[in-house]
Length: 427
Image 1 (cartoon, rainbow, N blue to C red):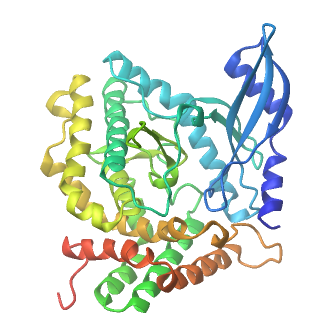
Image 2: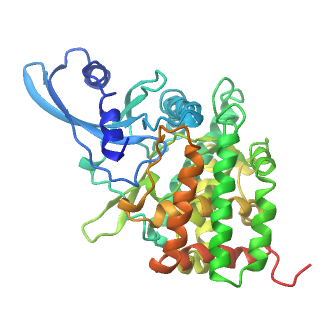
């Protein structure tokens, strides 16, 4: 099944019944659907855990002809059995965030006269295995759009993201204070490696991306200490990710997948970013706030923006986090000190390096070069085939894409300077 065939299989999951249910949930029982059509607007390389499309519909409401567009997240129809359980869990987690967690988070913010979280409205979802759909607000009419993933975010964009991540994190802290049992019977304990029963597919994928990172550094040369560090990290991946999910002082609800593709921005008439929307809450979970910071800062910024502005960006995060906590009456109990933010960020820098290796290929590949994440149908190891394809294209980009070397290597340069990776010759 090629890309076009897979997308058609995804489209076939969008039924008129589901469209009617989304319309009813959004506009009420008086709304009558008159016509609808699917209209894609994303490109290959924009979609991974799900396929994102849109449905344009016309309807009658109390004798008035109206129209609206919904964004629809669809089961990716890749046919890879080893990832079916993860796909289902991802849809369950995102639906849970919108239906169960978001009303509580926004409720506690409203109690303290704070604005709601910047996420789209969810209208409807159907969660039957292999047929999952989630209907969401279309943010395009409000002026929101994706930033080119091949470019790194500048300080203005990054500051908006850190502000909103801080508000999400702090809101969950206020909710925890109000209702210590809020996370009971939720999927917030499910992270990368326990998204499935044994996590073996994710561990295998992460081992593959580290192997790719090692080959890139060997090809470039001069990164022997980083290669040794990466080899050691590969052998401890399960331990690293299990420890990440353990209860800790700084545990909050994290976005969990905060990189360029999962952010939308709105601009003023001069092209200055003024608002951000967090989208794709499909991997949200409870863990240290520093996981989101490492994921975001080491995947979505270039080194020449991140390194000289890192302290200021962390302080931007801290200021907005403390602002929400103080407004919510948590006082000194929940406030973060400058030292705490830096120490916690550095403690989890290992995740920043791993996420960089995981995301770099998807960030910089041209859409037509993105490997097709789909079952081959010949009984081969599909995950190994996809990893090998990604590896070959990433190694090729070292020589053909001028963005690849600086974007990838700057992370290892910075983490060596910070002491996470021993410098060459160090004990």
